[in-house]
Image 1 (cartoon, helix red, strand yellow):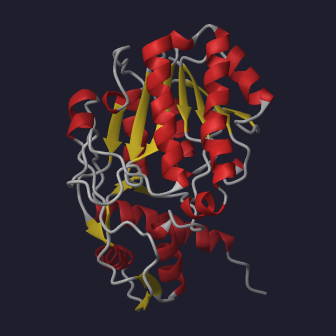
Image 2 (cartoon, helix red, strand yellow):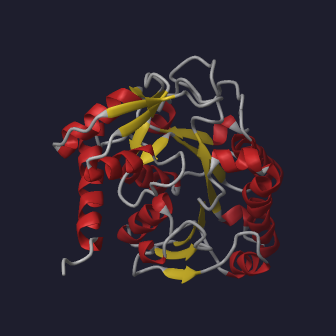
Length: 325
């Protein structure tokens, strides 16, 4: 049994990680400011702290919490918002992380606490790298959000090499599943689920042939749990401390739409809109390193994951619908 802190634990991915850690018998604390997360997502067995990761209170919790593992998922995660306000993005994603790292250093437990950071597996590589992208591929982040994630990985390498922090970065592909927020560009599966449920057309930007690596949230939580048991070498650099978490399967937006409609047993029209400027054309991750070092591979197929996700949204829609007069 470990004492584990999950930042962003009221959010989509974080709540599934908290569920997984509790199921494994660990003691779990959750930090979330509820700016995007939902209080009802926090599992009943976890202690909850409504805090901003930039705050002195969050730092105090880390200093005195005696955590053996910190899973850092709290973030400003909207790429478009990072472009509009890169200062705010850096304040949350870089300075917020440093607030926790410095609190951990002040606690005297830096070398005794595994620090697992949720990075990005698509945005950090950018277009133009050989696919599927491997961890040591060149980095060409094309947004302040991706730059911030890359910067934090560099900081973690520094804290590991200089101060002995056992830190790892998990570079997530496009995560989908129950509890996903349909608002924002990251939630295409959730958006499509809502549209299919409403019998409304799906909007596809560009020609729909742009690709992503879609990984089910339960598989992501399993990868995080596996990483919680790994201690990297103190001398390991940034890429040596990083693991891609995806499927290794490239799926186009049009294929995603078709797969979801098959899973839902419903068909809706597809409408095309102009391509979005700067959108990455292709993204898929190599996952051999995670398989070799973490003993992890995804177990949920896209069809199965979409069916489970659609069923969750359908159930939520039926329970939230107003009762007829």
